[in-house]
Every structure is written in C-alpha cells, then in structure tokens.
Amino acid sequence: MEASRAALPVPGVKQLVSDYFTLTKPKVQLLLLLTTITTMYVAGDPSIGLVAVAVIGGFLSAGGAGAFNHWYDRDIDEAMARTASRPIPAGRISPRAALIYAFGLQVASFVILTVGANVLSAFLALAGFFWYTVVYTLWLKRRSPQNIVIGGAAGAVPPLVGWAAVTGSVAPTALYLFAIIFYWTPPHFWALSLLMKNEYERVGVPMMPVVHGEKETRRQIVLYTLLLTLLTLLPFVFGFFGAIYAVVAVGLNAAFITLAIRLQRNADRASALRAYLFSLSYLAILFVAMVVDAQLLS
Ligand code: HEM
Ligand SMILES: CC(C)=CCC/C(C)=C/CC/C(C)=C/COP(=O)(O)OP(=O)(O)O
View (tube, helix red, strand yellow):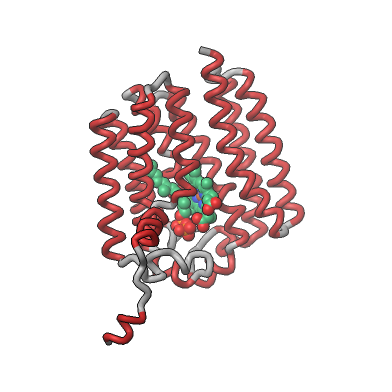
C-alpha cells in the first residue's frame, strides 16, 4: 500500500495551478470571452472596469462549467487518447476536488457579476452554467446526436451576459448574437467530430457521425452553414449593422460555405480539419467586424 502510494506522481505547485487552469478549458474561453467583450462594445460604451468584471465573471462561470464537464466525463476521457492526460483521468486532481472547484467558480462568478455589473448578467451566466452542465453534459451528450444542437445553446450565452452587463436588459440585437453562435456551433463541432468519430464510437457517445454516418454529418454541416449565412445577414437587412459588417459577413460566409461544400465532395480528414479551424476564425472575425461597424456608425 505504502509502496504504491509512494509510486504515485506528486504534482508540484506549478503543475497543480496549470491543471486547475486546464479544468476551465482556457482555449475555448478565449473565443467565448471575445464574444462577450465585442458584444459589450456593440451594446454601448462600457468602462474598462465593467469589461473586466464581465470577463472575470464570464471566465469563472464558463470555467466552472468546464470543470464540471471534466468531472462528469472523467470515465470516457480516460478511454480516449485526446483526453486521457487531462488532470482528473491522469490522477493529478481528485474528482471531489474538481467538483467543489466547479461550483466554487460558479458561486464566485455570481457574486462578482451581481456586485460589479448587475443581477441579470449574473443569472444569465448561471443559466449558461446550468445549460452546459445539466442539459449538455449530464443529459444529452451521451443520449442524443442532437446533443450539441440543443446543448450548444450554453456556448451562445456569453453575448447575453455582456449585453446585460452594459444595458441591464436583453435587446433583440443580443438575441441575434445568441442565435449566430447557436447556428455556428453545429458546423464547428461536427467538422471536428468527423476526425474523432472512432473514439466517440468506442466510448459510446452518440455524436452525429456515429449515429447517422459521416455522409449525413457532412450534409448537415452544409445545411447549418447555409442557415448560419442567412442568419448572419439578417442584422444587416434589419439595419442593426452597416456596410463594414455586411462586406465581412458576406466574405466569411462565402469561405465557410466553400469549405463545407468541399468537405461534402472530398470527404477527407484534411477538409474536415480545414472547416473546423476556419470556424474559429469565422466567429472571431465576425464579432470584431460588428464592433468596428457599430463604433464607426455611432
Ligand atoms: C456544445 C458545443 C461545443 C462543442 C461540443 C465543442 C467541442 C469542441 C471540441 C471537442 C474541441 C477540440 C479541442 C479540445 O479538445 O478541447 C473544440 C475546440 C474549440 N472550440 Fe468548441 N465546442 C462547442 C462550442 C464552442 C463554442 C460556443 C465556442 C466559442 C464561442 C468554442 C470554441 C472553441 C475553440 C476556441 C476551440 C479551439 C481550442 C483549442 O485549440 O484547443 N466551442 N470544441
Ligand atoms: C456562459 C457559460 C457558463 C457557458 C459555458 C459554455 C461552455 C463552457 C462551452 C464550451 C463548449 C465546449 C468546449 C464543449 C466541449 O465539450 P465536450 O464535453 O463535448 O468536449 P470534450 O470531449 O473536449 O470535453
């Protein structure tokens, strides 16, 4: 017993800090927070202090949700090469500590947003946390190939948090931004899921390519990219944004549709990877274009 305990690696402080940071899914957070910050400048003229509050509050909430996801999925993460070295399956953080950390981060987020911004932004972040933990992670991820369509709504919440922090309300423009991320998520994730199909199949997660096949997944990617195109041009039609947004949106959508159609025709891994990587730039550039447009119009 003593011998096996002695054989376990004892993580140093640096490793531990890095592991707790990893639980928050920091790279995904970069894009989530970009959508929060840009939305705040579309909504109005926030102080740097308010932006900092929204960034910290948003990070803690989404980070708590990410930690919860690491906690619940530790069994399947252990069985997949991509995720086996994550802090919990690798044994560097205990499941109990991760779960306490997850709720601790969400509580901190609620307090910071309530005190530093307003209670509406705090409740919206809490709703995002609930949706990602309960609706996506606990309920849908292992049950339905529609998991990321419905569950993906959590990732679309950050603009609502940003908008509410600035204005104290949720206006139609904020709902449009929510809808854009909602329709962007399926092509973003399904392109990647084509590359991870075998692993998902092995651990029994019913992602689209596992349940309906790769051909149908590629068809759905084209379909959602077309829906996303229609949606991203609507704010322009309704006069929310001007010419700069329109030009950028048309260019981005043309590129995304081209990549989606190429993926459908070529059906190879390189095309799937290209579509996934482009999806990240697509969302970042679109949201930055909104700010440039909104700032120049005002
Ligand atoms: C249910 C919805 C979503 C699912 C299932 C999903 C899934 C994934 C997966 C599996 C990865 C691969 C990288 C990894 O292993 O962590 C990834 C990468 C990424 N996702 Fe998503 N995603 C979703 C929504 C979002 C949203 C809403 C955003 C931001 C607005 C986002 C931003 C990113 C970014 C920035 C990366 C690249 C991270 C890296 O390079 O490691 N995702 N996503
Ligand atoms: C406002 C708020 C609290 C939002 C939270 C939303 C949030 C953290 C979205 C992240 C989306 C994401 C990385 C999903 C991957 O989960 P996965 O379990 O399918 O991927 P994995 O296999 O890499 O763990």
